[in-house]
Image (cartoon, rainbow, N blue to C red; front, side, top):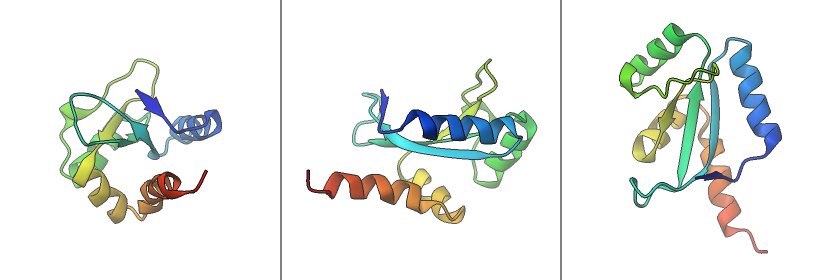
Amino acid sequence: MAFGISRKELTEWKNAIDQGGISFLTHYWIDERFPGVNTVTKVGCKDQQKLIAWGQKHGLKREWIHDRQDGYSHFDLLGEKQVEILTKEGLIKQLESLSSLKTQPR
């Protein structure tokens, strides 16, 4: 189950993909198959070959792509690999911003 993202963030992610870029979207996520994991980063690209090459650069396998017919195929980054790749890509703030939301007073 995904949560913690706005429609605007999702639209921006899709627009970047539509323009041929590799786009990152980090949000809260819960799946009983992955206990202790509460965030995911979706890394998408319309150009399947570009996405595969990007994934190979980070040690990700082609078969790990969530292949979607709507054109928004993507890798799901979880756990340590998520932190590692976001750090390498200079995007760790996407994950840190979610962590800071958990500690904000209500």
